[in-house]
Length: 130
Image (cartoon, rainbow, N blue to C red; front, side, top):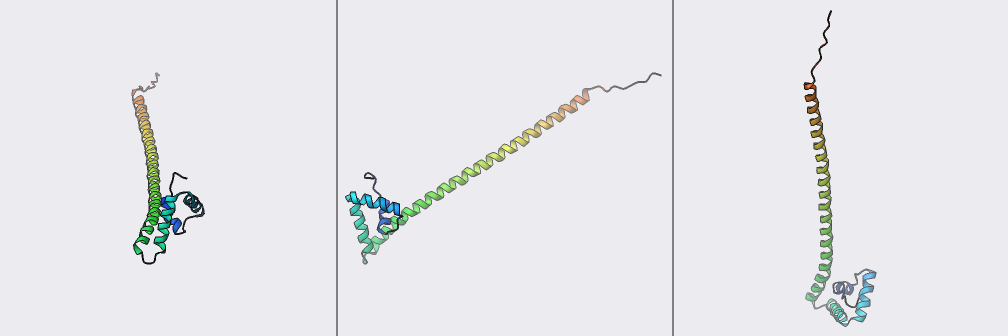
């Protein structure tokens, strides 16, 4: 975890809204990383400073921007799944339609061959010699 800084989770950690696992990871990292300690201290100061409205907005934007990104990604994945489902449905529909058309063409060809065969067979007329 030393090489990966949880910068996107720091605002949530400062606001105490992370789940337990995320909070443990951030806490463990902040204990070892001076850069993240400084960033977290700045975020906490911005949150607790009653006179600074602007920085609070920055922290909120960072945190909720991260949440919005996650929501956008989930929606994109859902949309991709819908498209994939529609492709499968259209593929199955076209396969069934093609099978029906092929069957009808084969049946029609067999009917035509049968009619031609019936026309070529000479009819035998029985004659009675009495």
